Image (cartoon, rainbow, N blue to C red; front, side, top):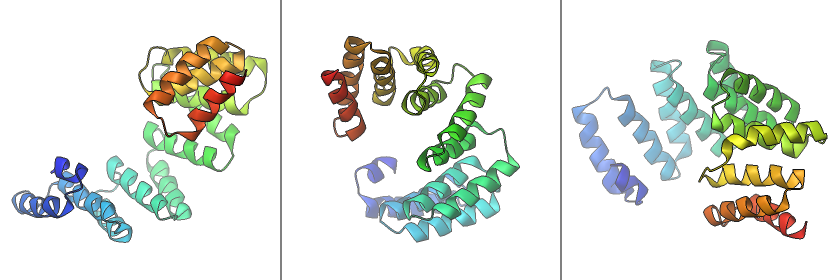
Length: 212
């Protein structure tokens, strides 16, 4: 079923899904797939309605909250998405995934200090969380100016060294560029650009490194 969806054979996927739901009518995963198919078909409002029904029956289910939040953002309903997230955080204020979503909201809205505060709390809780390390190092490098902040971003970003993920390579490269480690920065930014050749931020960072 997932293969059919990834290949864009949505009619086949829908038929297969109906058969499976007949066999497993209470399956949360299959109900979520129904919303996914609707979203892939461009029927975002129908997908949102599906996710809302599932959430009403499964309050607090993280994956449902994430899907509904994403769907609301897709249609530009940022306020409703943010309200959903606030409600979910009230119920589960320690959720790593929900806190990351809130930090990303702060980044989107230019509230970088609030984003840093959340990432710092998450990083203190688990310094081995490379996704949080990446986000924290990135925000520090982009939006703090002091030498101490750049050095802290560098120390955090060392946890990303050796990663094959372009986003992590980009963060490490940009932090190295901020420190003046141009040769190392170019190597990491080139690797990031190969992994995500159409990403404008990575392309810009690499151009800055070449020009340094």
